[in-house]
Length: 235
Image (cartoon, rainbow, N blue to C red; front, side, top):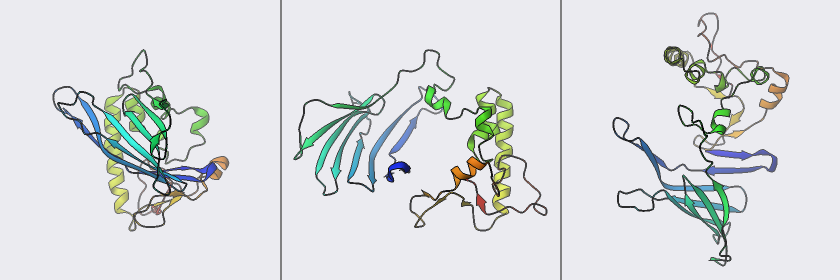
């Protein structure tokens, strides 16, 4: 995963840990994260977070511990906490904690008084919000325009399922109609396995509301003879 802070030209590259979901069929459904997350960037520091493997005998589960190092490999801070509660930081001096006080970096928000069907947070709900003013600015490839997703959010489960099946069929047919795979329109990467980086053009097109060559990927599949599928996907 690549996170790019454009205003300061800072790029962060991180490796996700393993997420295990238990009791999908029967019992209490729960998940846990385990493994090592490495975070690096194009500045002076890097971080390594260890998500502790959960066990039945563990009395203090969901622990996270980590260190922050400078470009020379010297430890400059330590991190500790729980991935479902909070994360704290201690600045170090010559590898030793310079202060007994910890700085709170992140803390879980309390769940809403009236929980949603999927226990989504208020922030998560807003990620799929689609207002009239916003809708007219979005390209036809924006995931907020997915009809199956919108039906599911509105509780229209039969419609959501039929739209999901239609989109899956459409994707399979579209895949057969192009030879070299989709090419992202506003992203590129230096190597075949490298991280994607933004190349520009999206915000300019959004300002002008010009999405030339950006396919309506959620509509009906066009006839192959009359509407050839371009090899560029608007993402």
